Amino acid sequence: MKTLNSVGRWLASPVPISVVLALVIGACFMLIAGVDPVSGYVAMVNGSFGTGAGIASTLQRAVPIIGIGIAIAVAFRAGVLNLGTEGQAGLGALAGGIVAIYVPGPAVLIVPLAFIAAIAVGALWGLITAVLQNLLGVPILLSTLLLNYPARYFSSWLIRYKLDEPTSDLVASEQVRPEIQLSMLVPRDSGFAETLRNTLGATNPVTMVLTGVNWSIVVLILVVLGAIFVNRRTRYGFESGLAGQNAEFVRYSGVKPGPLVLRTMAISGGLAGMFGMMLIIGAPSTRLIEGYFIQTNFAWTALLVTLLALYRPVGIVIAGLFFAAIMVGSDAMGRELGLSPQIAAVIQALVIILLAFRVALPRFGKRKAAEIGGDPDPDPGEHSTPVLAPASPASAVSKGDER
Image 1: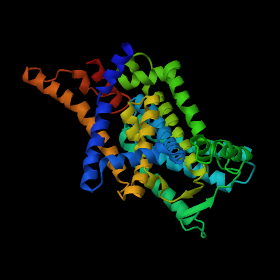
Image 2: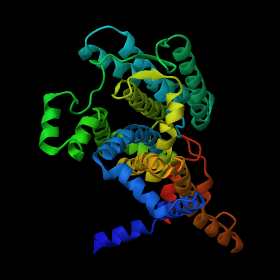
Image 3: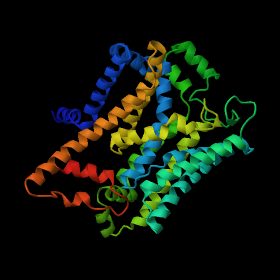
Image 4: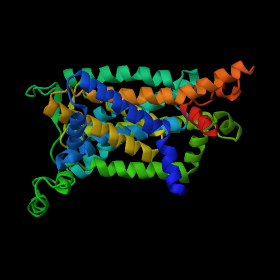
């Protein structure tokens, strides 16, 4: 009974209601485009989960979304509004890709060096914003957002004018050497892959996943488990969680906000850089491509996933798989029904807009009712300025729960 009550409360919460409403409105757009919504959503589900190839594509697409989402959640949970993961992931990919492509040596040496370079550069780009806030009072929300642009244009310039491979049809670097690449869980040309195809069938979901998803998913699983452990079992996790809910209390408890912000941005930026790099050295994408992170939009999708999951690692995994399924399924829907794949972007945007309305409107109604009753500010703490970051969203969520 307790479990049923918990499920019922969750179903009545803003997140599932917003998702359902977004799908309903998305169906209206399909009708306007002359497509049967039922056929559209069936094609979307079949494209993302109905076949082995679809499941493999969904899992592979979800890896960077979930990984960068965890990086964002590390910061947001501590009340540090890191909107710069596009730049951190892009520069991490650039640094790790350069090491993987141009530094000679055996794979056992080059792959760890590529990881180290990506994590270090992503962390350094994040630390710049923490230093700016600690020394000059520049809000991290602003500096991380703005630093995406120099990262974007520097990467574009370097790939186009210094690393471009003339024989490629794309503005891109050379390919990562095969022995350096993160291979599929089971290499497609291996004897074990042949055994799987003969035993289970070439289109069996197990065969397709093992031969169609690379080892970055294992790294992702370790990162998710690590994030859960850090949040629940370490001093840093305890301090960062308190900082996101009540930065003033953390300061008076003896925790110095400056070093906490530095650690948080280093971890967040480093994780973003690492997952950006794995997009470059992980099969099937094996080169630095100009504008890749802008076109794929992984960082901003990861931000939506993080907000939808309220910074919880398990929730980020679920939301990341949902968004990846929409993206992969919309491509399949476009192939089968001729509907633009941009319907995925429409549904994602609707989920966030509706979620914002579901969360904000009840609070606005309570405030207006309190003002009519003669109390112009029913919750003074709601307007207080946090020490670690401006207007931490985690603080707003916790206050909503307390009510």
